[in-house]
Length: 324
Length: 287
Image (cartoon, rainbow over all chains, first blue to last red):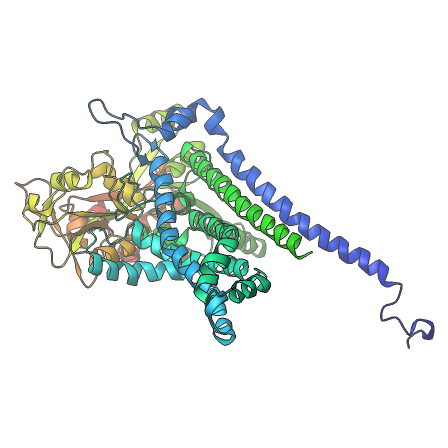
């Protein structure tokens, strides 16, 4: 069957054709994703444009009306109000932005110490067997659908937390933030752990050789060296926390408040889009504003993720630079 | 979702018509999302009884239904509110003779936790609670605990109706927590001894309905199918069908069947409140 002249080669020269087709297909798929992201942005932004161009839309939803406190009735204090379906629609974005930030910050405060602690343990202290047991299990957390985490927060965590802490609101920023933290832990953990294990073994050995113990090695040598990697993990985790929808939709109470308390209910940008987009009148001001919120979320997460990626790339270059 | 259902209905209708030899009567029904589920049930049952009729039901809201009727693109408009003055004028301009018939009722119950000692509430107190003027149960004779507000999402018809009827078009207190669907509100109140919520009539283990009175001088009324259909329960509304001119032919037959005992029983089975039998009788279209 095989040509005896080419018996020594595992592939026939003909396979060049397949190489061309194969690499072509792969190239197309890479660009499809790129074009997809671009088109998504264009479409979302296109639907938000009337906020900048249409006078009818700007009457209730101009940029300054969405940002600054408004006086809606004579004699009452001006306020930030999200009430898109009132007789007099109010489209202040502050309650929603504040809600998203509150939830994400609580999530980070909860997740980062746990994730970084777990990463230090896994990369520096755990035996090989333990490490291979712990790492996949934490990473499995990332695979839990957010609706499951949200349901858990809504039914179990909210009740337990209220009994323990005596919250006035059963569903609040704290409950949503902690549940969100569960979704963020695996992201921070994975990136931070990778950063620590990629620190060359020779550095650790050098430190040990001059008399440092394991704790000193981890705290004074590995942790500072891996800091950019940990920062990248935190940034990526924050991006996830801002964009995450289902958990906050279910566990945050969805009340558009602008209080400073972390134990009041909140309404986030993502949850607002999810709950209101379904039945909004297409082409209405409310519709345009929802797409504007979508654009903001897109830009936020894009910048955050880009930042995280850039940090990671620089670390990689630096490490490779050292090795060669 | 209703859009998808409507498309599905269109496709089925298309498939069905290509198979049928004689041309059947087509009736389109458009409008209120509150009514769309009932409209679909009625259409299914009516089509089972009449092979020669095809009814196509879609939602989109009362506003869309009214616009469709004014544009002449629907035969029947479903609406959970009456026409506004401007809409009547527009209809007149276009030579459309708006014919109104109430086909079912809708009542909104107010829930509290079982442990709450409050049994009755007036519409005024309810308004002050939801607009944030009353924030503690002790202000209306309950324990010294904060009132935790639960509401439906701000795009639901129930939310809109509650805001119009109970809140006199004022805004909900921003502390109001909004939840998707009556079931979620019931669940939240059942876990919150200080909570209050509203929605369709629903029963749950640790919640109960408040009896509602118009004012402190009026008799408080429990929300039941009977009190709503008699019109004694304060937070209830009629749901309408509108047509262009007095219906005749198959549409008249459909409307009269919907108002019949059979049609009203289907309404009740679909969790809507049937009309009072006398009202249903009075609404029948005669020649």
